[in-house]
Amino acid sequence: MSKFARREGPIRLGMVGGGAGAFIGAVHRIAARMDGKFQVVAGALSSTPEKARESGRAIGLPEDRIYSDFTSMAQREGRLGDGIEAVAIVTPNHMHAPVAREFLKRGIHVICDKPLTATLGEAKKLVKAAEGAEALFVLTHNYTGYPMVRQAKAMIDAGALGRIRVVQVEYPQDWLAAPAAADNKQAEWRNDPERSGMGGATGDIGTHAWNLARFVTGLELESLACDLDSFGEGRRTDDNAHVMLRFAGGAKGMLWCSQVAPGHENGLRLRVYGEKGGLEWAQENPTNLWFTPLGEPKRLLTRRGPGMGPEAERLTRTPAGHPEGFLEAFANIYAEAAEAIIAHRSGSEAPAGVTFPTLQDGLEGMMFVDACIRSSQKNAAWVSLK
Image (cartoon, rainbow, N blue to C red; front, side, top):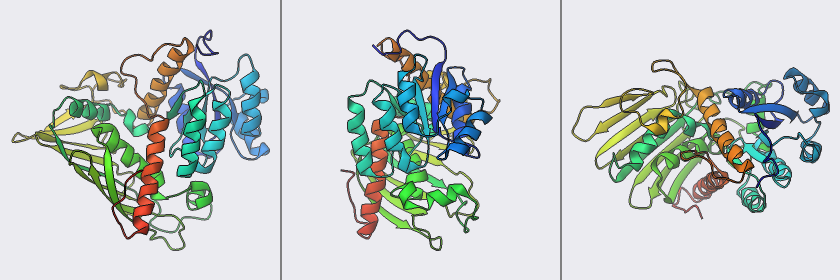
């Protein structure tokens, strides 16, 4: 039974990183409070004490719950009677592992932005550190929170496509097609291998594409062949990747991720083809799922429309025709995490159907990036994830 078993009401949430001007920190806070299941009560929101205080005050944190560093936050919150139950980690990648370890060892649940860590070695060490912790680990691969992604997964699980033959997933962006402005903090740390870790586009968006394909199809990878490029002048991390995939059972796949593709804003798209039909979903039009049974006309399935199953229905909030998108999908990950944390308070299992990306998904993502790098270094030779 959790040390938080007697607690009731919203889950007390802390945050590390995500201070003033940080896009992803604001997204996590919106997602956490959308369903009223979390309350942000503490934070170490910046790497400098002055910015940490400024950011904490800006979101209304009590003065005594604004911390200048994550270590003192973990130590004090772990002792407080009304200390946090969970912490959201929204720092640059190189800080994910050290921050997570501090809170896990105090029994505080971790909700961490992706990728899991900066390196595969760090990821493996974090998995070991978490094994003895009485706390949950949630990784915010938020695209798995879209209702129509859950619909696609349910249809494949039910055999609607038959045996899978081909998987195509792509994630093109154009925000690094030209040199970034000097004051672009996102580009600045993502182009620094010491902070972004191994991989550039592969770690940033390639892991999203890989996770989406794995989540929806359930296929296990046998090997991949990857060609990485850094087209940006002076860029020290990759900004484009072409990856061929061989899955157990004979299915084949292709993954393309790029941050130098003009005309693409956030073009995550998944296509899956089997013996009996195909599915197609695009993040920029997320309420639609195209289903084509073999030999029949193409069908449009819509969120909360005819043919939508319970797996998708449980994650939708508004009537049909009212758009739900990125923030709601992110909130679904938090809502699922809340269900698991509440169950954990009493030592019980999470309700049926509760699903969220885990530490194991994060480790697999880092193994994917590592394999891409190893393959590219060998002139796109076939390598395994092991």
